[in-house]
Length: 375
Image (cartoon, rainbow, N blue to C red; front, top):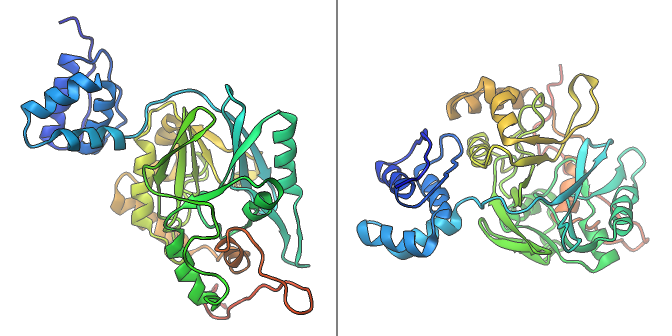
């Protein structure tokens, strides 16, 4: 029939493999799958490559086990095809080794700010907005229109500047919907149920897994990626993915998973979702700790991470990864700002309200987390 094809290494159900073959033989000129995709995910990716009106109905008719509605749902929930190349600018905040981003649609010049940092000096208690103001200055200099203020998760190592930016710009803020569970967890640790409702009302929008929204004309898909925290999400648009604290740069391995609500098995599964993206997808990480004193970096690709990430090379299975990650986490002290920052970040990046003397105060719960060995 003149269709070109490729040999695919497919891990999944025989039915999914049959669907892949049927799509290739019948209608698809080129199909590109990530390595070792799960059966349904592989099917969804192939269905996205097929002519939807013809292929979905034909497959649904011939294979009654999969009704049309279910088949369409698989295609819709599969990882999105690459569509466009957003403009991305990273801003490294050296005090916390955090990376903030401005991502823009080059056609409309609409943009979003991702994971902004509110400056904080724990020694003096001083706060500042230098980092966040630099983001706004860049947006203004480029002639961008700010459309979203986004966080990937409630950060444990720096204050979010989402609240400050919201006040400055009146642009909507957003985070993943599971932040409500994080709020409940930390609400009890800080004993702040009277002043910090655990309902997500501190943000303008809470995203669900697979939900889509727009930056300008570019579609953005939300990918639920728990493990580092139970509320972590990634943002996918065009050929870019903002993957926060899942995997770091190639020599940095992966993020820790021992915070309250964290899970090494969940982190492994989240990393596999990211590794199933197309090889050329640009990955933008949330931190860089500059191993060996090298210069800060924050951009890689799926292909590079799969081939060279130090932890993914060492751990090939979930069991191996969990053992590696949990052993590593046992050696790490808690982040120096975790107790400072979480009470701010579960409030949507807002500081506690001033008390009757006009001053704001942070609460430091004693014996709430496991400390370093005393010896």
